[in-house]
Image (cartoon, rainbow, N blue to C red):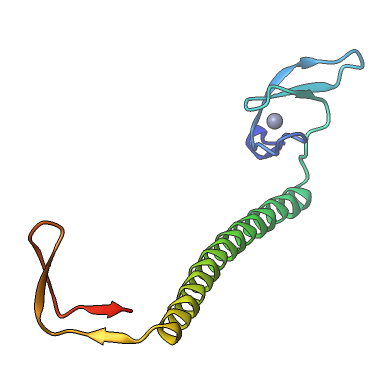
Length: 123
Ligand SMILES: [Zn+2]
């Protein structure tokens, strides 16, 4: 079996290095990534194919979940802003109901000479 096509059963890293033999004289392998030793790496081609497909699917699932989370968060933000605008609107409408509007198109001074033009004043 080609050492580049065997897979670590712990972390699924492909490519283990030979690391002596166990008491029963079975080849021992060491993973270069997680450093775990094993005498039974995944070496079957079909099993490897299945495994890589599984890992690919798991990654796809994870990225779909991440995307979902981001979309849900964006949606919550959107709803929060919309609710705030609605509440603000309702308050303004109540204010306008309670008071008459004095629309002035002239200019007058506020705050030490700052000029305000075309203002709407609540009374
Ligand atoms: Zn490993």
